[in-house]
Length: 528
Image (tube, rainbow, N blue to C red):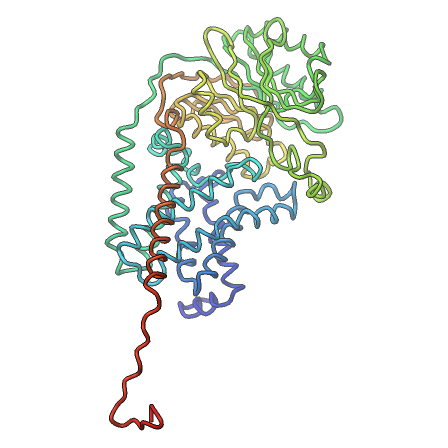
């Protein structure tokens, strides 16, 4: 049945229909991310949500639409958690979705009705800034980390990667929201099309200038990196079987002149100090392939209490002593926040039964021949600041060891692998994303793909000829400056609104004017 515009308006008058529309509109941007990876859709994906919010009858309803849209967005980008966390996924999405309530309120504040040219121009700065604050707050690891930042949808677009080297993923998110705001005005408000078009032109000009000005990484060397991906190995004795499979795949690399072999997250399920037999087998492998091996140990340590996830470098003589303990843990997957209150999550899903322990600092490792590597573990590759700090500390090559075996049939492996492209482009350093079960991927210093992905159906080793580059990108030098710019814009808005309110209060209420009397009114009965 085809619905007319009047029918749609009538249905959106119902809180239930409107709420469902907000959830659906908020979920649409997910199509921009891998696996669909419709990167171009990100430039219009927010338009339905913006149009819905600007039509809200009240400011409170606009805030509700922002909240429900945020719920839809968070549920869509984390849908792959449903098999693990079940209903708790919806609870988390609802809590984090509330971060978009102020964004909804501001959208109606600037775009409701027929906005003036000044309101449209202000919206082109204020709404991207408010969105930036949402992404900043939810990027805290305790709230799930920066998974699904809007700008990360552009991971495979060369001009966007160039812009990432200037302002990181934060600059991409800001520009995407600004474009969506301008398109929404073009669609809905005929009288305000001139400032909307001007905003699009200005955004394109600024982006083009940044693209042309940003320095390009100068390739000054190459290294051969091998990735070992054993594939899904389940059942009794899984850790031993996985080690044996990784061992067999690594032996195939002998004679291929590799500089480093990288295994995935949790590739070794035993503390090497407790299992000298495994340490000796790794040392023998290192001698056989004539390269160090970076493994990831997920085990209870013998020298201190607790379970750690650690990147451990092993050479021909055994562990070299270089070790990085994972610092940022996955909420519920590796620890339960406020376990005394939220420990019940372990009974409704696959939340961590015991909290993993945290490392205390990032580490740059010397592999040999002057190569310095900066390891990260799992979703730490989603944090732009971690890769930036490693690059500033002298890492020539960034590495992320990951495992997404619990989410093989979802979009999570592709989305996780895509994040390394952004980290490479932001820092001007190549990055290797090595996993147990796929997707494994390698990117050059401009974020370009190097070689082919190892998909989720692969159990193999692969060698990549990785270009090296040095120098400092603007993002590596200046950090999250788009976030600071957004804070200044919102501070200016708050100051302006506060000054306006103060002027209104000082002016006082308007004087009451008695109603005019006509010749036909009766003095005894006014208005008659």
